[in-house]
Amino acid sequence: MYFEIKKNEVLTFFYTYAKFIIMEKCLSATKIFNEFGERNIDARRIIGGNTTNIMELNNLKYRWAYDLYRTMGFTNFWIPEEISMNDDKKQYEKLLSEAEKRAYELVLSFLIALDSFQVVNLKEFTRYLTAPELHMAITAQEFQEALHSYSYQLILESVVDPIKADEIYNYWRQDEVLKERIKVIAEIYDNLRFNPSIENFVKATIANYVLESLYFYSGFAFFYTLGRQGKMLNTVQQIKYINRDELTHVTLFRNIILSLKKEQPDVFKEKELEKWIVEYFKFATYHEIRWGQYVTQNKILGLNNDLIEKYIKYLADLRITQLGFKPIYHITENPLPWIDQFRTINNTKTDFFQKKPQTYAKRNELRW
Image (tube, rainbow, N blue to C red; front, top):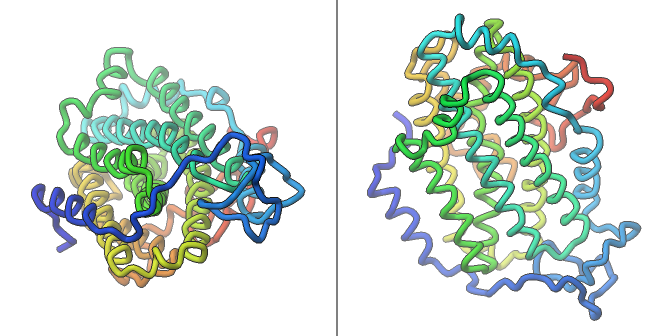
């Protein structure tokens, strides 16, 4: 039986931990130009540094951020329209079961919300960053999140009729399970937006990492399960590119968190923050499992409730240990190992276990 949180306990969880004061230090937005900023990269910080905000790219501290900017901005560039969706429209209408259609629509609705939040929220992060190479990386990620939103729009316009597309965008208005998930994600982001502090920045960074590394994955698994059966392959191809992008975002925020742990040791030494992080992972894992099972209703061939639970717990352990914390569920073996092979692009692998995605096809090398 997996970790269980009732609705009143959800509220208790957030309001209780919101009261803990790890370091109630206000976080100020950086000036557009700071004439007294330092050039010494040894003094550069993720937040709280003294930067001119001039991008002297010959003077980098966080080389990984610059490398990820180049990967996201140039190597991983793709255009959704280059993937024809005609076959998917026919399969959606004639081949998919009612359970598959329902899951297809609900997963898209949630993914649309996730990437929509990222486009807005990433702007909040850049207000407080004090390293130019990080501004570049976050800007590249923001572009990719907007591209994902555009990709979802293209899928909907191509596969379903306009009335159904409008319904899918607004499922959260009627579906309480979906609405609850959206509200919880937005709440942590809004804490940083309206009460900027080091504590809230760290929490929002953790929430961002969890969103990128966990919240997408029961949905991705559903699409890959369809694709493995030869269904909705063009949608799956769009998802593969989105998945590839998300892995760079996971790497980016993982590196930001690990750097913050070194630069803000007093914050991360606080037991209450460590407890909050572990509890938030448990909370996120529970809700991603619940969502995946709610969406599929144990009616999707090749993806039952037990597999969803084990897969998300496996990912949760992987993600939290990559931040230097102990595993929660002690699941070391991927229960859906075929996903790692299925989501490759032109024999180009992105690996969950790598700190960085390994290699990427350039736009003119992509084959549909």
